[in-house]
Amino acid sequence: AFARAVRRHLSPNRLSAIADEAGGKIRGCSAPALLRLYEELLRGCQEAADQVQARGGNAADARLDWFGSEVRCQELVGLCAGMARLEAKLRQAESSGNAGGFALGPREMPAPTQWMRGCGWGPPQDAALVLGVHLHGLGHWERLAEDPTLGLGGFLAAAVAGGNEAEVPSLPKPSHLETRAQALLRQLDKVARRETLPPRPRAASGRRGSGAGRGREGSKELGREPRGKDSRGRDSRAEAARAEASQPPRKNPAPRPSAAQLPGGSQPPAHGMSREQGLAVLGKECMTWVGKLRTLQRLGSEMPEQRLLLKSRKYLHAIGAGVRAACAGGKEDEARLWAFVSSYTGNSMDGAELAGVYKRLPAGNSENKEA
Image (tube, rainbow, N blue to C red; front, side):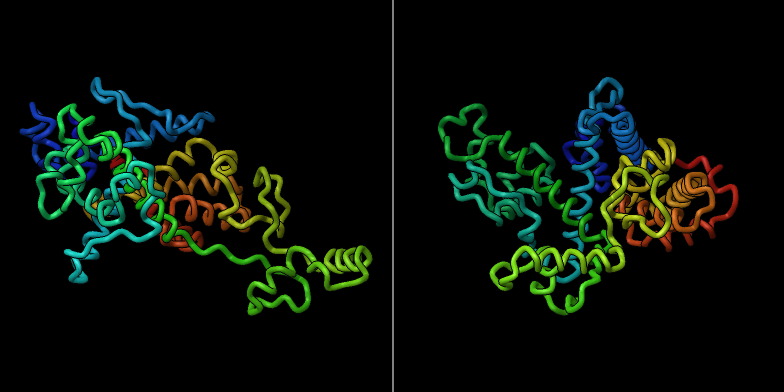
């Protein structure tokens, strides 16, 4: 019952609504106990998803038996992360004095579906839908329809028809609304995580006359010779190829399969290192801690500051030990692996800053039992 209630409300800020919906002994729990239970559920889901992926499986297939209730791990973690992004967006709108004009940006809305086109559902209804899910819970369509501030009453007639959806065939069914709300929450999280990643450096070129300020014209020179501008044809292309081969190697070669096989000075950028490569280099145990840090980065905004600090220190201590063991003291490898950790977790600090924080941690921090 608790897991189902969490999936409906998706936020630690809605613990009282979660407790009321779960009922039973959960309703009588204190707020700290409810928060701890909520965090344990999400942590268990993330760990289960990480373990399935570490074994080469699909993380979306991970399931957790939570006191008799089967939980789709990756789905729940992703929806809770999306709700956290939505709450942050609502707080930002409120602090700017624009709470009444809440809207989603173009990148925060997935492509419209067929039923949306059939009933005139657009961006205002998308924004009202996620706001209603935040206020009333996922699946409480009657409450959303009765909320005059949302303006969705006419659109939700089929969803609240009580099995008589055939009377209003052009309007969305409950399954349509739930699928759309989930897609919007996932998209909010996806866009927010993309914005926190460090910018990808542009590939350098050894050709003359292809400076960074030349825009599209310069970028074309990195690929192939323009057509129709040289009568020498094949000879001119061969000459250009020889000229390019004589230049120094580019700074962004294609990603290699394993860090151990990379020669010094020709390593790919950190964001070109896949999770599978990170797992091969750092090992399963270290990547588990990296996964926990990633979850903390996504969901920690709603956590008490002291608890967030303790978890961050513990995870960084464990990751740092794994990085040192993996690179055996090689400074270039160590910097590259820390950059991978920063990019993979979506951390606001770059790899060098994370490594600096790790080195300043007191010895024995990993013995802290706070998980």
